[in-house]
Image (cartoon, rainbow, N blue to C red; front, side, top):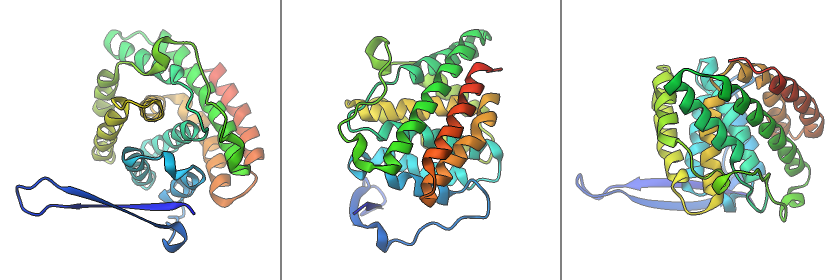
Length: 267
């Protein structure tokens, strides 16, 4: 049974701190989100997240998921691209039983923060290419999880070679730049996302750290031209997952598209 988590904030008085009540219910008792007729919608994101184990999704990851749903329903392309890119990034971090690390995510975040400060995009181009390859790896994990949920229970996530496993990077500087570039459709949602990602970044456990890094890196990559190139392939994978279709076929096609995009990153 996949749990549906409902969070209620209740204040007993105007000056009281809110209390949090969490209740679980069978997801089959909850009406599914309805698509809006576009390829990218909250229905797509919501159904794709149903493949991951709810036992690893804490309240801040659930908050991120709901923000991605809202971003997917925005009318502008950047918000929709952000929702899809970050969804694939987060799903990859939630797919395996044992977390990997966030070396590629941390590298692209640091490169972005440095490029904003110096105006030099050379390191950012390399970091974006490496992170696109990480997204390709995530798609492979998503495909395995969709076809056989137990296949990754004892598997470890991708592991790079970087100091601290990518758990420390220029979080605030990167999000300052992301928020400065946000448009009116998304600024409120991006600010909420920043708050949730910050809690994940500061968490003690590596799973939360990895998801926080994935969301932050996704916010960076979604602003690049490369994101628009890979977006149709990412949407196809999520659509196959959501519909219970040929995920392996969509993943294979996406892998080739992402490899081509990684080899030709232009900023």
